[in-house]
Image (cartoon, rainbow, N blue to C red; front, side, top):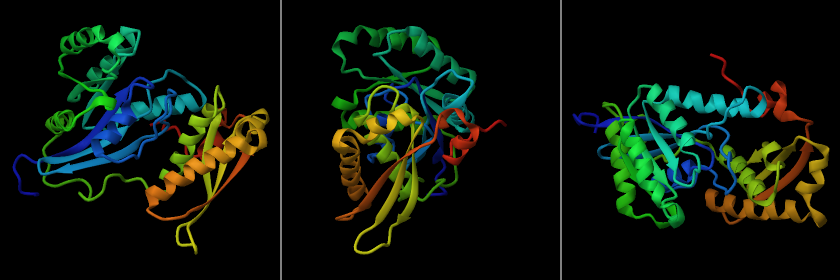
Length: 305
């Protein structure tokens, strides 16, 4: 493989507005769920790497948080994380949703990728929204005007042909390489503990409302994958306000039981085991999302370089 003249490999940053469908698209392309997906915007908080390998090359997808504009706290970390992904990538895929009411919001993403001067292309998402169908041609023209091609996809109604078209375009924009960057049997560089934390955070987003999931973090206290008779996982759900604790727990512990049950089922499937012992503990760290030290402890560290 390393001697193939046209072999390509590199990092492809996935850039878009919050809730544009970036994580769903990456999961679909690598055929594994490694990025969490919810109906709420700004679910992705840190870059996640997904790998697709084939004869023609290897694509290392970097799923970035949605673009936000903020200079403080957790949102500042999210903004810097997205900007760092652009800098770290060899090429970019702009994910533009036709559900976006403001054309300026999609133009912002296009401006960011063109400013990087890196090879890029665009994927239009949520094209199944029939009441927004008129926007497809408008968005396609906008992308063409900015010097790139556009593919259209609906994750709900997609085909293997759609997937191949996107993957072919991904490989096309990557640099030539002598060999893959990672083992071709891998589909992610994430470890099991990180994936478990993301699964639990996803269930929190799905169960809880308003600002609560946005001011919440997940931290593993103990992870014993080799415990008998089953793996044992102890996790803290960190919240920013004392008033959020009864909301997370729920009446009669309904919410925390629901989060635990749904997370446990998905973790067992991911780890390919019959049973997992999962213990969730709700911990209050006042306004952790505005405290640099607390954010660092939770691995939300802003790179100032």
